[in-house]
Image 1 (cartoon, rainbow, N blue to C red):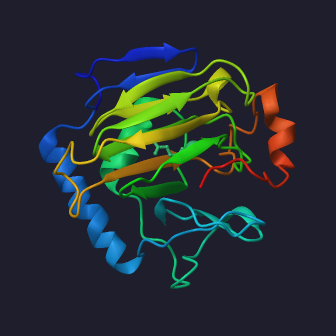
Image 2 (image 1 turned 60 degrees about the vertical axis):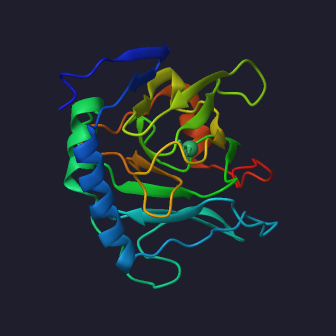
Length: 235
Ligand code: SIN
Ligand code: FE2
């Protein structure tokens, strides 16, 4: 997997594999996703404190799901609406994870974001994970989108890139805590997703794997005691 793909260095720690999945593989994955969504339906999370609804809908696959509600961001073993365990992560995503990251254990969370008309994702950091030694791996499906990534502070320069269906993006090492978000989705640029729009699948390791307990100095301490991020604008 990924051997025959081109690989672009976006910035230190950030790698893009354009069209990591071919059309037929994307279609098969979308079928697997929607089969899982039958048992773990999309729901609309709300921001901590304010209760403002996200513009994306979300669900998760894997042993731990990332959830947001009035009380904060956290990982949970159960779907907040059905209270059932999350469905397993599709095999093709596990294969992409081991090919791309080389991390010695599988991801524990696959967050699924569904972007409908006008949905976006404000600049934020992924820092609710105890393990920051593993990168974040993100696959785009469906409509094109404009993704923005910067440094580890909210201010400072950012770089924009267009993410297309099948593109795989990884950020880790010096970019593990980079601010990133989706400025906009270009409607009707793909017909892959039933009902249109864009899906993003974000794979993350949450807990350190045995033998990989060391986390980078950068931000590790902060993350393990991560306070609530008021107004990060994720939603
Ligand atoms: C996220 O950072 O949670 C989503 C990014 C994306 O949709 O590409
Ligand atoms: Fe993120």
